[in-house]
Length: 450
Image 1: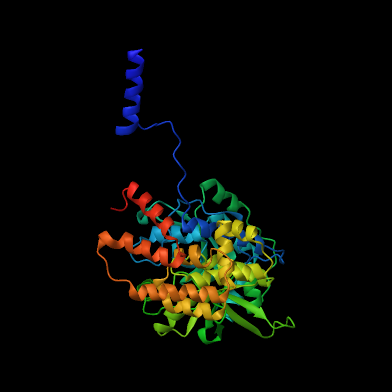
Image 2: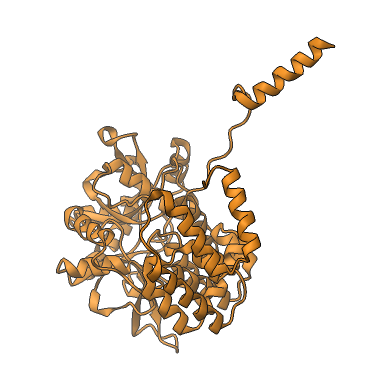
């Protein structure tokens, strides 16, 4: 009896005073999804929605046939000067962002090159490139080979005709899509080269967009009034770093521009509308550039256009709360439900509902919130202002209280920060005195307050 009681006492003491030994057989918890992973899921969903039947063209991108097989990285900037070339390429492949590559760095398969030369299409591409030197009718798919800068090489997987024509004309670089594929998958794509598809000698902006190609455009012709991000701080460290990066290593991710026809659908006159890359355009202007190479796109509906713009910008760290809310609102206007938006962007449905409430706020409320800048955090906006349905008057009253509390709040040392935050919470949430005592008692019990 005593032995039993002693063993029970020992087991209790171990549970209280000592940490239990690690269970090595216990499965580790899955890592929390990064913002980069969430964006990749959104982009994959957008790709599926934008996929539509098109006339068969050699210039059509093969990027949709295989997804990059690469290790997940945190949300990093492929333009960052601190990263190696190999790391920048991996990030570009993960995000599905096109970019420039030197033609001399491409590794071509001799068998596929010989077949391409016999097809006669190399001459057609040469004519197209000569007729419009600023155009690239198609986007080659390139596989990243190697594990570091020391053994890095680039295996060409598609559009051999275009690349061979560029080599003949002495072009130094091409815009490509990078992927990271296993050897067997890369060989499968190489074996699928179709040499029977016709090539149209059309290098109009509409034709280039259908071929997922690129065009050098005067920046004055690009409309930028549909930017999801309404305010861009040109003095911020992030923007200055972007300018410095482009000045040092060049533009690594061309802006995405939609080729938009007039209401009658005529292709004689087109408009260029920036879908993503507004900050890059501003950075190029600051560096004195007047033209920029852009990736041309066609969208079959307003819904797809909104999806593409939002998927590109939704997980940017510096995107303002209201810009993100307006992006969710655009998707709702296209008929998407809260459930559909949450599934597309890998977001919580309750969070999506809060952003949609914020998108419907009065213009005066939004103006006041923008003026407060980073003083009012996203967490506060989500959990206080957007937590429920509020009238415009109630929203203004909450902002008034927040502003008054901000102006009256003294500077505390570290020991008084919890008390200051607690008082701010009491004021804004109108917590009764009896509930305040319970909250403070719980915080003292947890050792968070004295």
